[in-house]
Length: 333
Ligand SMILES: Nc1nc2c(ncn2[C@@H]2O[C@H](COP(=O)(O)OP(=O)(O)OP(=O)(O)O)[C@@H](O)[C@H]2O)c(=O)[nH]1
Ligand SMILES: [Mg+2]
Image (cartoon, rainbow, N blue to C red; front, side, top):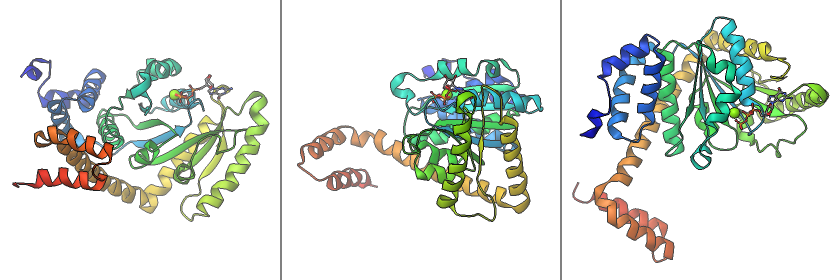
């Protein structure tokens, strides 16, 4: 097979490379996760099996907000702040639009220039081919590799417009939502469901002429979040202002995250959430497996297009179409 000639190493080489913090090997392993070749994915899974005992120690942070809210600029300053405190940071960016637009990969790298050059930071924009569930699994797998490579804090950046936050929320420990002052939340396209997931809301660009409006927005969001989530006896989501430009509020947000981690480790919720996420991970793998096997099945090759066309023309109902295809696979089992 040509695959074997394509410069793949034995599993143990990848494992050793990752565990020793070799960034080139880490990058290559993430490429295996994202590869469309099933053999690459299988190799990636073998690597993950080996490194799993070395995972679990990082703080996993999801950061979301509409395009242009200031995510990359925030991460750049936040990243440098925590690196100066002695942490190693990995940033994985999911961009659901990149499939069409060719990606904001370049843009993100340039907006995180200082961070990208720092030896204690690793930035990896994620390819978003495939289903969102698939993206979730791939991101989680990449996160595990980064953990095994010794990164203490892992940020998953996602654009806050759709479903991807729900998936990210199943991967991270702490969810930070970035918002802008001066635009109603409807305008910002942030759904109530995303607000519900937030452990902290930061009003960005709270600088210059925007300062006063940001403080006002902070108070409004404090009220809104109480209405949406009620009063919690474990964690009341925090609402703060920040500015990447003037470097305001960055340290406060890190302190909030640290407080959250300490509190949840002490009351046991940390462990419970991680175990639930593991179960979700397993289920999501099953879903992907079933889906991929279904659509790739040779038995369906011709029939699928045929039935699809009939559904399109209204000759059979979508339910019947699905049933016919499933029955075809079940036949002779
Ligand atoms: N005044 C001010 N401008 C900012 C701040 N942070 C970011 N910006 C500007 O806002 C614009 C968008 O910032 P990004 O950090 O690229 O935003 P993003 O959310 O990562 O954008 P996407 O990756 O496209 O979704 C840029 O022109 C930044 O210079 C800030 O704290 N203050
Ligand atoms: Mg960005």
